[in-house]
Length: 105
Image (cartoon, rainbow, N blue to C red; front, side, top):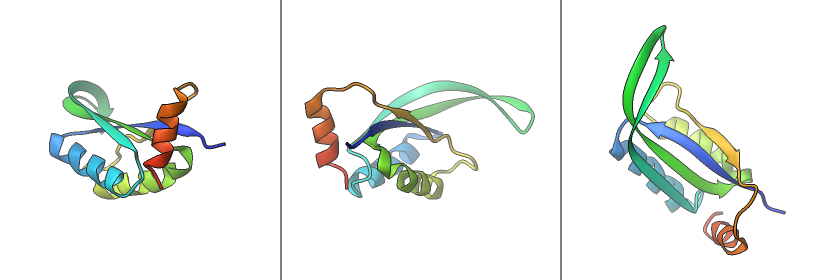
């Protein structure tokens, strides 16, 4: 049975998010990527507290594609260490999961 996931990934610009999202969908690595604009992230980087406006990508895909997606995000992403977090989809409508399956490799 195929397992499905949502990958969370923040980036610093809308253009960066759209570039990553378009590539993943075009290549069949993701069925859909939602981009949530202008969220505030507060984090520690190089011993300093940072506050940045970011764009969150919600990437819907198959679990078996995680490593391929991770590799592509690392190449396309402007950050030195991009956030790439996978969350299992434990419940969803059958038709939606079927749609993810149909629209990914």
